[in-house]
Picture 1 (tube, rainbow, N blue to C red):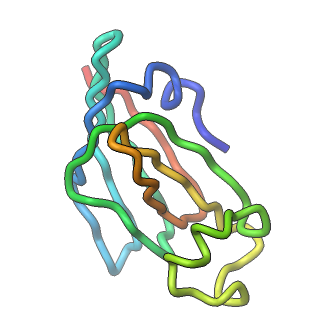
Picture 2: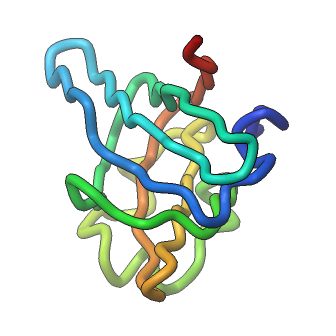
Length: 114
């Protein structure tokens, strides 16, 4: 579910929300990885839910189906299980500071910037 290029060297990264288009349900997050170094864009498509600060230090990212979502997600998302579709993916983004943030989307893409 997650592109290998995205998860490689994700720890010690800096994430910043670049844009969110409600009408298109599209979220773009810039990631700057210390190791590599590498800068890229994480593009979440067909967003259902976002719980993500504008800027954060990234540690890791995990993708789960809605049926595999953690109790922490259900406590914080304010959605009923029936509001998510079977092909929705819960992306858990862990901050280096400890908190876990969530994005629910149909898919994610990663583009490395030159």
